Every structure is written in structure tokens, then in C-alpha cells.
Amino acid sequence: MFPIDQFQSLHTPFYYYDIALLRHTLETVVTESGKYPNYHVHYAIKANHDPKLLSIIASHGLGADCVSGGEIACAIQAGIPSHQIVYAGVGKSDAEIALALEHEIGCFNVESLAELRVINEIAEKMHRQARVAFRVNPDVDAHTHEKITTGLSENKFGISLAHLSQAVEEAKQLSAVTLVGLHFHIGSQIEQMHVFQTLCERINTIVSQLTDQGIALQSINVGGGLGVDYRHPLDHPLPDFAKYFHTFHSHLRLPQGTEIHFELGRSIICQCGHLISRVLYVKEGEAKKFVILDAGMNDLIRPAMYGARHHITHLTASHDAATETYDIVGPICESSDIFAIAQQFPHTRRGDLLAIHSAGAYGQSMASCYNSRPLAPAVYSEV
Ligand SMILES: *Cc1c(COP(=O)(O)O)cnc(C)c1O
Image (cartoon, rainbow, N blue to C red; front, top):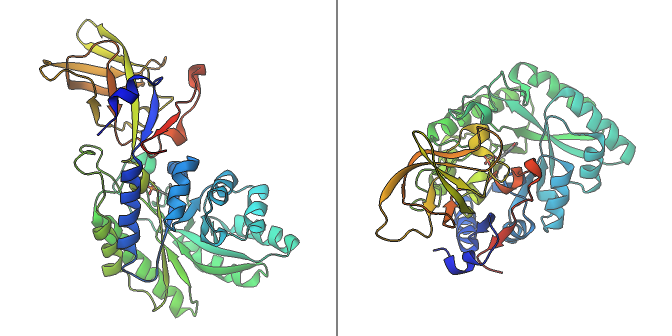
């Protein structure tokens, strides 16, 4: 599966992207969402903005979900048509709003009344019309890690249900904004389909209340958040997209012709990326053995930031190597720079190569130069 001979000649650490898997994942997304004629999928660029990967994603016809002006520029650079770009974020700056208006993006996902007024003001000055959707905080628990839960009323995101009617009334009064729909994004790494079912039921109630008030909506954006299998990434490289889209098809009850938009990040890009690292030292501690890697939390921050655990495999162990127990750690001067605790692993030596799997999403895009370390480059399975 991995070109070990090629890896031996490369400087580590680096991100390795399996392009065949990315294409297979994208084809599956396109096929499964394509079963429902009004479904539109946007790729959430913040998961990974690598230009080569983005251009492959664009070539499969996906739109983009952006959370900054920089991401809007990345999407356009990759060839994603601007009408397929949606733009979310609680803190859009004036310059970012102007950039989005200049490119006539598909939709602003508006997170507050204050933001709505600013978009209207800037659009008026530019003689543009802004298409907007209100990001509604539906108060649905995503049953995921607290740091990636976004749809509870205590989170900073979106407009609360209590303020929605007022926001809709105000949007009608503003001349340079057109309300096209509602947006929901309740969190990330959601593994249980019943969470999406609950979201659908909440959306049905909200939309029917608005319909009763005489407000027709062109589109509903259900956000992203579909989880991946971090425990068995090599056995389950693809999330169950068929079940995911079918869950929405079975539970959403919307007026005929309503467009349904999705914003998938992790589920598209996660499993095709692997962080490849070399063992610098094997250290015998008092009570533990440590494998010290040349990759650290600056390259992949998820373990330190979210307590995430990534499956790790040994790429160069001999077949008859005995099993030992190691903590696998990075070189950074932080105690949280740990990739695995008490991992059963083949006997390991300095110079061995390891692969940290499921690193395609929120890996390279969140990397930093902390400790003045260079950014790990990308290597692709196809040029
Ligand atoms: C991060 C984000 C997404 C993508 O989430 P995934 O869990 O990677 O699918 C979608 N929409 C919004 C608004 C986001 O902030």
C-alpha cells in the first residue's frame, strides 16, 4: 500500500496523500448524493486546503464551504465556480465580505443580525445583491467531542430560534440582501445517524413554522460533520455516504423543490492522508518505553488539542519482531505532544518509519511552525 522505498529516500516528516482513495471517495459522494436530484455538496476547505487536492475535488463538481476570505480565494484558484461557494463564520471582516460580494458567491451563511446589517451596507455601496441564509442554532447535541460541538444554544455559532423570526423580518426590509434559506451545522466527527435524524426533525419544525408565516425558502443547508473511523482506517477508508444521504432523504420533509446543501470536510479528505514520520530515538524511561518521532504536535495538533487518537502503523518492522508497549511521542517541548499511550507495537529502532493514519483532515491545514520547525510538505501517490 505504501511505497516504502520511496519513503526511505525522503526527508521526514511529510504528509502522504493517496490520490486513488480521494478519487474513489469523491466518486462515491457524487454517486450517492446524485440519487437525490436537489442535493448539492460543498467541500469544507478548512479540513485541508492543499491546492492539488482542491483541484481534484473541484474536478468532481463539488462546491466549496469557506470560513474566511483566504478560503474563498483558494476555492476560486482551484476552479470552483463562485456560485457554488458558501461562506460561514461568526466574524467576517468588511474586507472579506467585499471579496465575497465581488466574486458573487452563492450564499453568505449569516450568524447574527449585526452581520446581516453590515453585509447589506457593504453590498449597497458595491451595487451588489447578497444572497444570504441564516445560520440557525438548532440546539441539537451532536454527541461528539465538546470542542467540536457547535449546535448547542451555549455555543457561539448561529442565530437562536428565539431570534429567527425577527431576523427574517429584518432581512425583508433590507434592500441589498436576499434571504434564500437556512443553514445548520451542529458539529464534527458525528458517528451516530440518529443525530442527523434529530437535526432533520428540528429542521422540519422550523421550516414549517416559517412557511406558516408566509416565508418560502429556496434552500436548506444541513452543514457537515459526518464522522470517519479513526480506529480502523485501513479496513474502513470510506464513511457510509449512502446511509448518510439516505438519512436526510428519509427524514427531511420540505416543500417540493427545496435545494438541500451539504458541507462535508473530514469525511471527504481524512482517510486519504497519512503523516509519515521517522523514529529519532527509543528511550527507556523508569516505567515506560518511549518512541520519539520527528513529527510533533505542530505537524498534527489533533491529539494535543482534542485528545484525538490516530491509528499508527509501523512501516518497516521485521516480520518476526516481538511486540512491546510504547508511548509514541513527538519532539515538541509540551507534555501534550503525545500520539499514543501504551501502544502495543513491534519492537522499534531508531530510523524506523511510522504512519499516523486518518491525517488528511485538520492535519496539514492546522499545522504551525511552533518551535521554529518547518512545515511538513505534501507527497502525493500520483503526480
Ligand atoms: C467545519 C465546518 C464544516 C465541515 O465539518 P466536517 O466535520 O469536517 O464535515 C461544515 N460547515 C461549517 C460551517 C464548518 O464550520
